[in-house]
Image (tube, rainbow over all chains, first blue to last red; front, side, top):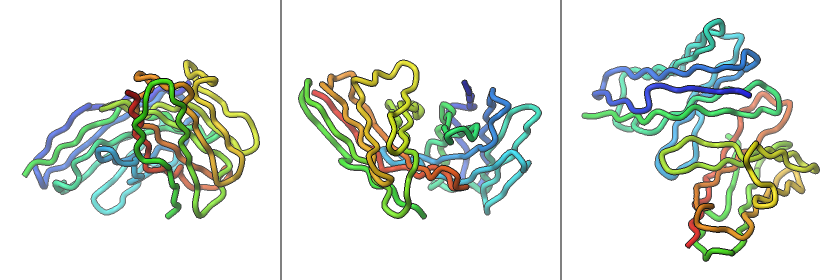
Length: 112
Length: 116
């Protein structure tokens, strides 16, 4: 089955700096890669996603890049703000029954 | 966006009790619902995939007799934790998806289950 690895597990940046979180996946059939933000005790919230026919996608301060050959994808957050502090999860989906495999999560702390 | 309602949000009960958690898609027909379990500071682990009108597909290591899943309609799936014990304490989250749509999974708010 699919295996998704995520790094780093924790990340601390100063407000205004950029944050980058990286994930790798094992199943070359995976074709959908969402990123979720989860605050303590809350539901995961989809913040951005990318499909395998696209190499990069951007939404304001958030961008995701995908390298299908290397089987890795990354989340980039620019001009970080304290409210960006949360746990971020990447995920991969082969498209079969839309079954998501999640990464291990990255705890992002944005300090003032 | 799509709304998925999960109830209850918090349950505290004695060991041996069976607990039912409901997951409802409020504004779309969910052909598939997923049930996840999340331990503190850990990732979401898929427990089972539930398709409307058929038996759930359980992930390896998940006891189907322990975690009963019913998906009787396109808007409701239930997870029953039978004879719960302290090790079943966890955060359970459902998500709903319409097969064939280009929409992502929509998550419920989760249920924090504490077994004393």
